[in-house]
Image (cartoon, rainbow, N blue to C red):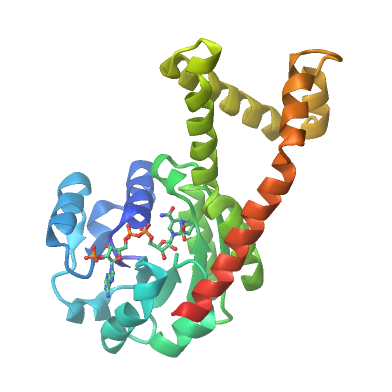
Length: 268
Ligand SMILES: NC(=O)C1=CN([C@@H]2O[C@H](COP(=O)(O)OP(=O)(O)OC[C@H]3O[C@@H](n4cnc5c(N)ncnc54)[C@H](OP(=O)(O)O)[C@@H]3O)[C@@H](O)[C@H]2O)C=CC1
Ligand SMILES: O=C(O)[C@@H]1CCC=N1
């Protein structure tokens, strides 16, 4: 893949660009960026990463792959504005939450399409991405796309319908973890610790617990039991989580995000 053009140059586009360049998976000269009106933002990304600003829409006929990275609500307008300039072999990758392949095909015509759901940890090569392909994606392009996603983290291939749930878990997931950290920090002083101390304790605790699960040696429930001494502190803490129905709260969070992904498809 020689030339890749990002249609939309926001947070997710930047996370992917940084991840790719740091890994050497895609070179800065291969990347073109465009947005709706924020020229300063394009200059900022050009300055930071050495990517090209797309000089004009005509140049899209030369790119091998576009990456749709606007907000879902802006996607239709963005696709309409680029469709006349794409060549028939140009692949379309989309990170748009909720927007189905069928909608992209309606706007951009028959072409290879991949829907990707990464997360912002792509910035440091730690995304957990989901992906699904349409039938026009051949083996070579599929392998290429998977390689590009592996460069920014892990990747699972799923059915298109499952991408709503992938979005709810791992697309939005970093925000849930940051929210959790904010909550830990908020209570710090009430129990006699400074916020920065709690941050360093809990970031390491999260990383350590995640790494323990990642070894695959033991189930989370088994690991949890090993921490929980009868009559001890953990038991008291978990009892409070149960009394406040944390599991039900998490279920509501994921279901609500999944439903919102479905709604986004209709809102376009
Ligand atoms: N942020 C995240 O954690 C994740 C986001 N996503 C998906 O990624 C997509 C982008 O999200 P995010 O990066 O956060 O959004 P941002 O708001 O940060 O960026 C959106 C970009 O789209 C551009 N844009 C708007 N309209 C057009 C148009 N007509 N033509 C070209 N560009 C346009 C904006 O340009 P301008 O500033 O000039 O208006 C801006 O550069 C969304 O669809 C989201 O669902 C997926 C996974 C995770
Ligand atoms: O909040 C959103 O809609 C996007 C999709 C996943 C993460 N951010």
